[in-house]
Image 1 (tube, rainbow, N blue to C red):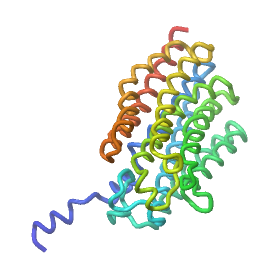
Image 2 (tube, rainbow, N blue to C red; image 1 turned 180 degrees about the horizontal axis):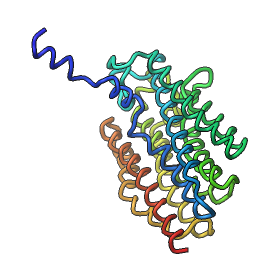
Image 3 (cartoon, rainbow, N blue to C red; image 1 turned 135 degrees about the horizontal axis):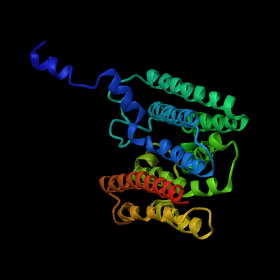
Image 4 (cartoon, rainbow, N blue to C red; image 1 turned 45 degrees about the vertical axis):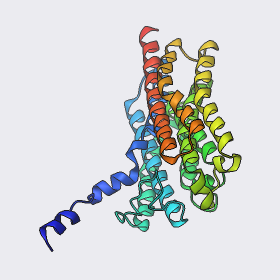
Length: 309
């Protein structure tokens, strides 16, 4: 083997890097942000328990990683994701991990998240078990048979519920050991924006999903209606934010989140103006930035309300 061949052979990602790619670290804000929001809301109402917070954060993160890996596995075996598909980690398609390794990697990470959840059950009670169990099941059956929620146009609904309200109220519960209406309501705009990420992804992949027989909300209602749905999710989050303040369920400090309109506007405008995959992919990245920065400003606003209350 020549020196050039050795360099080429060694140029690929290491096994560790392959597993990191398979976990999709760019998506972690979807599980980390709502845990932080629920925890800060709980801090406003009482003492802070760092250990419980850490267990909730790690548990939520590993359940998401498990969902990502099982999602990639079933999308691969069902022929939904190919080397030409944009979006997923592509570690199976590039030969970095086998499909079997991806599957069992997902099961192991679900297990780690579940262990964190069981410790919290011992500390906080059975409601954590209920929330954790349905979260793991939703993550696994997001693409796994027989439910395959993402293949029957239920992906957006699943993501909204489990990456918005469930995580926020769960993080609040492990601190205060009760559920509140305010934590549920404040989770709604977060749910809207994380769902907007998936919906923009599905608008981008609308044609390829149709060709592969994958039913998403975008393929069912059509491109134009899907663009309006995206607008509703994005701008609906800001309408909800105003209502939360006006109705007294959130401090006015959270209006700082309106700084993220600079991402919201192009996220909605681009899909209406172009159906090119590369253009809609740019809109998708705007939704990712929007969700991340909205979450940051929401947390900052809640902390400021705690500081000046």
